[in-house]
Image 1 (cartoon, helix red, strand yellow):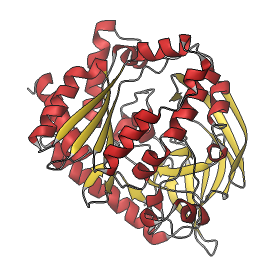
Image 2 (cartoon, rainbow, N blue to C red):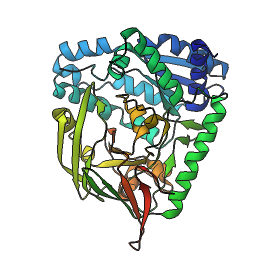
Image 3 (cartoon, one colour):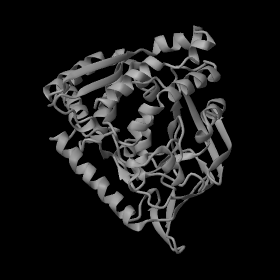
Image 4 (tube, rainbow, N blue to C red):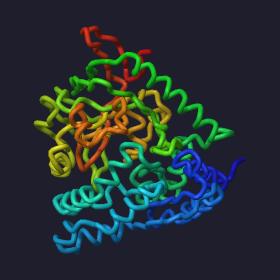
Amino acid sequence: MTTFQAKLEKYAELAVKIGVNVQPGQTLVINAPLAAAEFIRLIARQAYAAGAGFVKVNWTDETITRLMFEHAEDEILSKPPVWFAGELTELAENGAATLAVVADNPDALKGIDPQRIATYQKTRSETLTKYREMQMSDKVSWSIVAYPSQAWADKVFPELPEDERVNKLWEAIFRAVRLDSDDPVAAWQSHLNTLESKASVLNAKKYKSLHYIAPGTDLVIELPEGHRWEQGSSINAKGHSFVANMPTEEVFTAPLKTGVNGTVSSTKPLSYGGNVIDGFSITFENGRIVSVSAEKGQETLEHLISMDEGSKYLGEVALVPHRSPISNSNILFYNTLFDENASNHLAIGEAYATCLEGGKELSKEEQVARGLNKSVTHVDFMIGSAEMDIDGILADGTREPVFRGGNWAF
């Protein structure tokens, strides 16, 4: 039987070899919580074994973050972190890869004034604009993996004895990233090939728009001319592959900024900014959000769509079958890295330049001219279910089934 330690080492290997795909001499920047220190050390060892020139770790701590929101002066929350953004951008410009390790407590900032959180997030996002644009045009390699904290496990498995929850969450994460296979690296390569086959079918179709129908949802999303469907594996500016999200079950593209009309309803809670938004619906007219309603987290949702003008529009359209491994686990993770890979989803905010033919080489202005949305934020929310149908509409008006009963129709 494979020991936990052996699996943890394999997980670190996946993050290094499949996630960021560290190259000889490359710098690896790891953004991680203190709780994941043991795992980060394993990642660093794997990175150096792969030939990394330097591994730099930026540590975070949720308790310290909460204390900041509770006690820091307002002017501190609105002060741009120029030093942090400058360092990340300089490292990326010199070819560094970035790995984020998430262990977020979904309720970490519950009770904190949403306006203080929104101010901090907006300022930080604006300061990191250049770095984020490099990420979203695949100029650099980056990836996100997860580490189960006690607080996160408590949220996911409240029905279990407290001392069993973290182990249960580990089991779920290991399954989601295919560590239950004999050769996880080969399993990932095969999985990415399957996703690429789905993207290829959609790229050949060149749909003009998609029509979503489900309980509480009647939404038409127009796609820009020359749009491309992408999948989890990307190629950076130096020709090296990387996988931005581990796990990943999606194929995705960008909507035409002004081409979204109708109403869409969420099907899973959204953990955002240390709070949970749930039971929400969003209505669009000519791409712009004109109304939102949430059973929980209304104020947080309103702050999200007020980050800037671009946060009132969509930037991503992603397709995930309801019969995906994460959905089949019947686990609500309260973490978008996992929940978005159990459900069709959309993203408010910035669009990926890679979702246009030749988009990686386009300027920001050229991307906008071709219909992409630009924003300081990018937040995915889940809309899929076993009751969702999606039609692809061709340029001549012909409709074809893309999803039926929450799953691929082809």
